[in-house]
Figure 1 (spheres, rainbow, N blue to C red):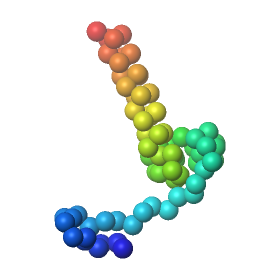
Figure 2 (cartoon, one colour):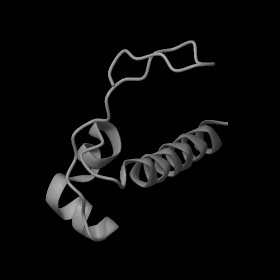
Figure 3 (spheres, rainbow, N blue to C red):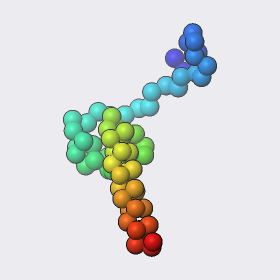
Length: 69
């Protein structure tokens, strides 16, 4: 299915990445690590971990801007 362009689509689809399913978010973090889950999509909780990472980075950035301002 890689490289196949379906009717009405302009960009060819890429194959789904390989990942192992985890039963919970905490198991995914224990097994694959936080950055492995968030940045490398090693399991199905990648988007959840990326959202958590975004909140952490936003909180740190906001705190630094508040302290420097």
